[in-house]
Amino acid sequence: MLPTSGGSVYRGRDVALLTQHGKEGVIAPILEEALACRVRRVAGYDTDLLGTFTRDIPRAGRQLEAARKKARIGMELAGLPLGLASEGSFGPDPFSGMFSWNVEMIVWIDDVLGVEVVGVASGGARFSHVLTSSWEEAERFARAAGFPEHGLVVRPRHEDDPQIRKGIADWERLREAFEWARGEAGDDGSVFVETDLRAHLNPTRMGMIGEAARDLARKLCTLCPDCEAPGFQLAERVPGLPCGECRSPTREARADIYRCLLCGHQVTVERPETAAPAGRCDFCNP
Image (tube, rainbow, N blue to C red):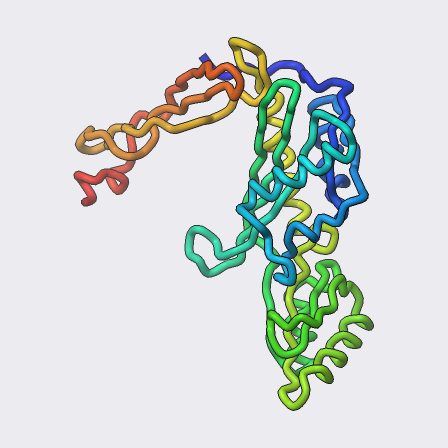
């Protein structure tokens, strides 16, 4: 028995979204079409106080905790029992560790039903930097970084200098900021230039936020076959898919377990694969 999808329980409901970087532009259309809800952008709070990508204000707690806090603040400001918020993180890719990687999470909190659902998406990122005293090198970096479509941040001397120019999105401002930083750097003359990771200045990241919103919509549209609560989703994988050569159980998944966040009802769905490659077998390939 597969998880069942059904109509939205959020039809006509208002949902608070706290953001100051234009995320409503990609999140609202996706969720409103899928759920027939109304996403209400909430202003009046500086979300940079919860942490910045430029490291001048460190993020307290983990990525999901930060998203929850944003959602809760938005719900309180709007006086709504439904809220959502997104939070991103950047680092090396999980495969080779050589490329920039972006993970986006969108948390949906429903205080009426008492459920929390999280949409997730990840992929390659526009996230790089250069330390240079040469305008020509800075210009080459900017072009490679997707500027001016992707904004830049400039600092004198090094990546943690407290003096900072953000939101640079045209060549005239970039040259002016570069000369300012080079002057502030003194005899060293070094300028630190990096990608601006705020969503409204990073189209690549904004696209990933949209993918996380689609993942969230899919989960919210999948209802528990027992109690019909939203968010009936994959909870764990069952290992033991037999090796195609020796038939020994491997660590590869043979089934998926879907579970309700509200009542705990679960369904085990066997995977279509009948055997794992010998390369995945601890006996054939120790």
